[in-house]
Image 1 (cartoon, one colour):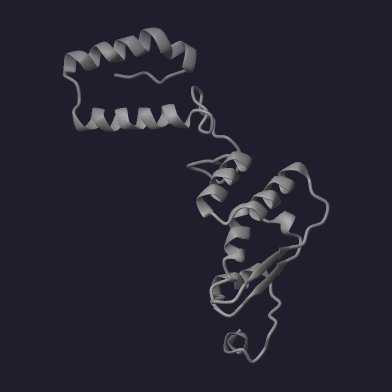
Image 2 (cartoon, helix red, strand yellow):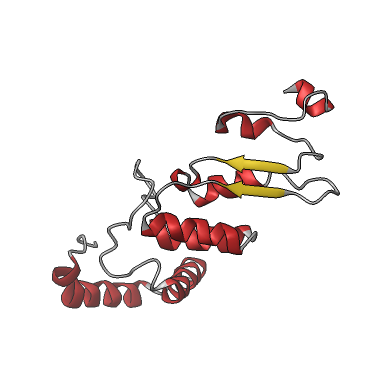
Length: 163
């Protein structure tokens, strides 16, 4: 690695484990074999290891047989270098996974909303919750709200008992 950084050797062949330590501004070409096996975040990170200097750089994605999801990941990498856009596509393709747990992809078991489809209303709900905490209602208003939830929504959505 040190010889590569100093320019004493011109080609470095490695596994993705080495990616974290590579900071060689004059590196201009990266070839990723079996690119279809990597997630968007990892492909984006790997690609970011080249093109740090003034010279034109290239990232070559070599693939084998592609399923639909792999085609979409590779298409995303070809079309964009915007990390936020890539993260958004990754979220759409894989889902958010679990907040608490070990599952890294798939949709969480939200019973009322879909985190991808309902992002706008979920943001409104987050803002309302923050406002509620910042300026809570009177005890009487709170008791009315709890009674309404219990009477109208508890059975339908399996809400826990609120006391």
